[in-house]
Length: 420
Ligand code: HEM
Image 1 (cartoon, rainbow, N blue to C red):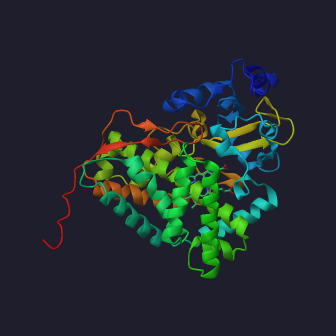
Image 2: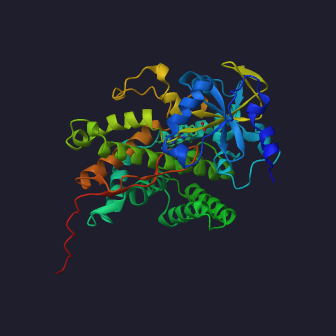
Image 3: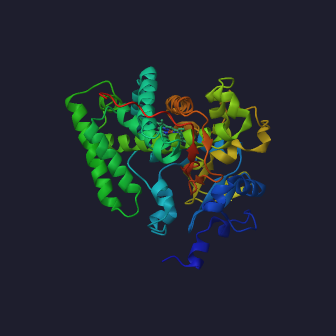
């Protein structure tokens, strides 16, 4: 059990003469999620990198500027490593076992958590496979899935756009991108839902999930097709690497895309600059995506890195062994960039897809999926409006999106029954 004293001893501010005099600010909880930029501003006032509480009892640092974020991301893995075996509290068993930080930051045998040549080999398999995705076919697939989801609620005039649309759409899309059969796809989606359901046995759900990914691998080894699973096999991955890579790519794609769809639709229907213009086609959806990627990035704080040895960085002595989270949200909002509000369209200089050797390998696919899904929702749901003044934001440190986004729209007439 962690005592307050031992927790304080594990806080980087306790070791650091140059650290701010204040207690590390929490970057979790409803207050933070409701207004993260107030926290980022307070942290930025302390320095380009500041001590934070990542989750209850989990300590580390957060970058607060564009420059500090880029510096860390570009110096991976020479001065900062990705592999969480450098995380002292984890190695010492001091991270609370039910901590939300653990789910997002514990090591797994996949490219995301590796450094050097092992990372490069697995990443090459991923990038060379994703490059082969036919983007026109992908847009058609997304439209088909969007229509299936919308058909289920279009006559109601109300729906929860998070639960009924933006959450399931990326998962269903990825299942098709991986060429999964319907039964294996169902096994993957059910197991992932069980993993996030606190009433379920997470270990059992994880075993089922890995078994479904292995079944998909065996299927494609026997009968390859033009899909990402078959291309990853072609790139030479073993069965174990296949399972972990399928899980990484599906996991890395789904929640961020879901967040981008919701954050963009919320912006379009509530912001007068977009509301009429996007509906009338005066301003393209891609302009709204650019603005959201700058101002409300789907992955707000992530890319945990670990200093290799003691380092002084932007005037702060960095203790090795503590996670340093890169804040994509604070970097994009860095006032020294001097970007005028409203002038984000066409500017892709944001860090929302990260940078350096671990940068997102699929920003173009992410944009195609998100843009197609948003356009389809706007086309098929006329007079789309928020049905609540306070949609519920996702809690937590790492993601920015909504768990619930109730909307109203002009209902479509029920389809006439055939054979009357
Ligand atoms: C809006 C959508 C997306 C956003 C905002 C996003 C953002 C990011 C970010 C910030 C990282 C860096 C994570 C880190 O260093 O810890 C990352 C990595 C990654 N993303 Fe994305 N992503 C998106 C969509 C996708 C999609 C569609 C795919 C695949 C189809 C994908 C696959 C990956 C993979 C495999 C990595 C790990 C790369 C590596 O470690 O070398 N992402 N993404």
